[in-house]
Length: 355
Ligand code: AMP
Ligand code: MG
Image (cartoon, rainbow, N blue to C red; front, side, top):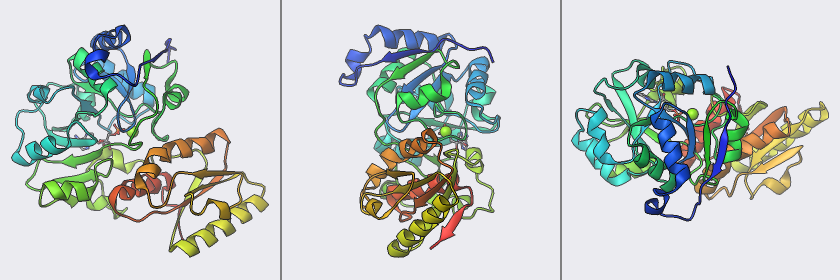
């Protein structure tokens, strides 16, 4: 692939959307999107890699830059809910209710589309995934571009998603035209993907909006069985791939707190004795008990928002120190921790240990 010059532009993080709309750099980035270029930008979840969702060539460039499998469809980002009818012919009552409560925000809805998007965006499916992000820079860019923008996470496929401009740069410099730096993202993990094509909404991927939050708004919500049974085929194509993973071998350790800590201690000692570089992903409550080459504290065991916010940064730190084997703590399977556990399970790719 021919290398591109990637421009890294810092965008002020303390301005309102109305002020951002008049910034030259955002206007240029929006113009480039309209011309078929690739622009990475911050959202409230992770950094996205944006391209015109109607242009097949631009979409193919996204797949190439990320090394993403072609059967994994992209999320279309809009700047206004008024744009939705351009790509979706019908919005159900349930979808409308979810939109009212959660947009702009980390909720992606899967709906039947009109057939006017590039084939690559939907991977040939009759549905499209759509959301409106809750970030002033993303919203200003999307409104200036005024077209539907497909934006998967701005990382190399399979690696942890990017939550800072540095992460994007490490993965995609030379492959995209513009990187808009808006500082670290807030939520830290991706959006929740919900299929609203049927009577009952189905969670296809847990994320920034929790199942409990969804249930407060719509009475019945189901969760794709493939999320809990590894042998079932997921309804969201992306969920079948190993994902969110550092390069070292990650082992996820289950079990009650005391046993889990004891097991991680023993495993780390064994691996250190074998001459391996050992990483531990832990919480501030347990960190002092461990010895390893690199200990990453992703927050407090009582603060799922902190853990989600720092998770990918911690996973990437293991790569920077060329860690061979990582032992990760488990979290309860509810609330935002459920989304964190989904990512850790994907990163572990079946390497689960029971303490
Ligand atoms: P990413 O943009 O990398 O955060 O991934 C987008 C996620 O949304 C992947 O898991 C995709 O498989 C999923 N997705 C996108 N479009 C659809 C769709 N039409 N139906 C089901 N899942 C989708
Ligand atoms: Mg992704």
